[in-house]
Length: 58
Image (spheres, rainbow, N blue to C red):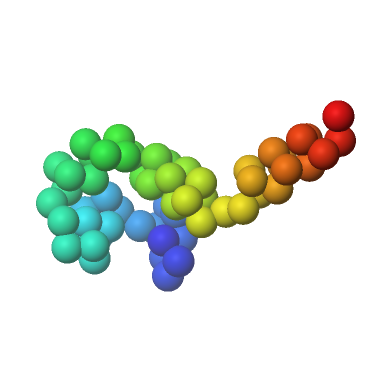
């Protein structure tokens, strides 16, 4: 997705690059959007910052 963008990347290319079966991709993420959301949640600190701010500003 980094090279081709969201629309330019196919669901065939992603598992090939990751070394997994396409069925595995759909089982875990359902679709490309699911992969993107999962990656964002795993590598983003925005959620943790939001929680920390809410806890301190009561």
